[in-house]
Amino acid sequence: MPEKRTYSDRRAYMVIAVSKRRRRLKEMVIEYKGGKCSVCGYKKYAGAFDLHHVDGKTKDFGLSTRGLTRSWEKIKTESDKCILVCANCHREIHGGITQLPKVI
Picture 1 (spheres, rainbow, N blue to C red):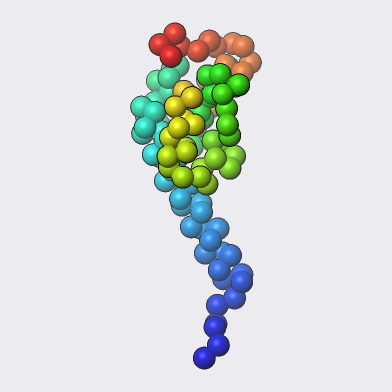
Picture 2: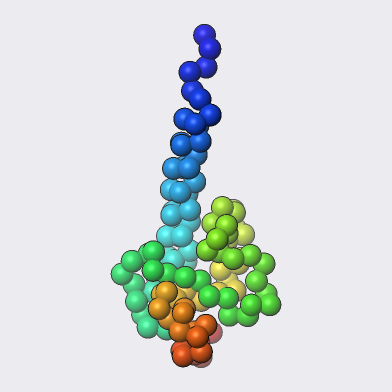
């Protein structure tokens, strides 16, 4: 009996599966990094969090773009070089308005 699934069926399934995995890994990173913004304490919505590399020279890969497709061990190692911040604080850090907390 011939295979009934098509490439587009498989593609649609993979898009959903990868999206779910990335969401889960982001939740794991947020939990691993303390669950709240290191600057202001924000903790309402997971989609509002970013990871900011404390020293950009040590950055092996960005966690926001394709980083969440890697293994948990690689993600954890890279996130150890970062602080968890909300999107507003992250923009302010890059804009020079907000300084990183001294506890880093």
